[in-house]
Amino acid sequence: MQTRDPDICVITCALTGVLANRSQCAGIPYTPEEIGEEARRAYEAGASVTHIHARNDDGSPTFSPEVFARIKTEVRKRSPIILNYSTGTMSDDVSEQCTYIRESQPEIAALNMGTMNYSKYSKKRKEFVFDMVFSNTYEKIIKLLSVMNEAGVKPELECFDSGHTHGVWPLVEMGILKPPLQYSFIVNVLGGIPPLVESLQLQSKITVPGSEWEVIAISHGHWRMLATGLVLGGNIRTGLEDHLYLPNGDMAKSNGDMVEVAARMCRDMGRRPATVEEARAILSLPDAT
Image 1 (tube, one colour):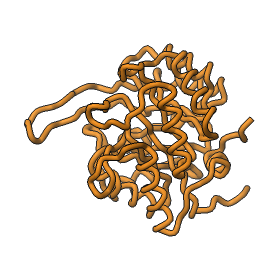
Image 2: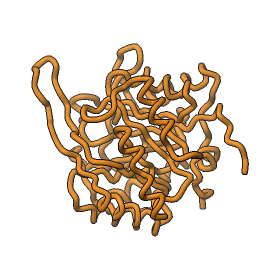
Image 3: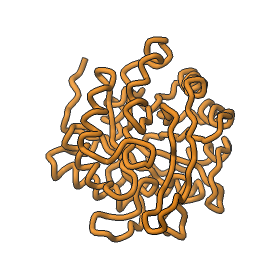
């Protein structure tokens, strides 16, 4: 087995998300064509993976399999970047998610690993902006994971807290979740683990041996936590889903702007961004067909 080069870092770019809109940042893409263009910009700046939520043309979120299929077509016209599709939903009905995973067969699909409070609080107004329960029972996880296995899609285990990370072991024991695993540690979501060095140290210690992990840092502290992930040997994610601002405080004009900074951080710390081919090997993905 080839030894993984610790100096190579897989950079993922999360292009759009579901919460922010163009009134907050003009660079957020909505249409499949715009998402394809942003994926190209991210790839050219140094990203090897793109994480994708789908939107309607008016910017509202959608789980339409037809839209996800169009997004794949538009991305593939422009770059060889690896596709990672979101499957996250507050609903227990994941029929549309199962359909677009089967039909579009992205290389990777995100899989949320536990139930949590999912909230945003305004210190200025001293009130909650939103306050929800993000339900991810094992039944829901297994339904999505079974479809991913059938379609040959790699699950990316999204863990918002240490219980989510630790809680994968029954799925491994059942044989439905097959190592080597790929984790994402999300920090700074209210209801999840805080954005601290110690959070990533704990999370990375309780993974299944031989796994890959990345840090996803939401909003303020984004760049500091990406630096932490780089120092600890992890992979990193950036993009307009996660944060809208560059380190100097200027709003990013595109996802490419965000990836340029992340790639520079890699190099400044003695690491380098993975190519698409290297990312496929690191993440245990098959070669492109």
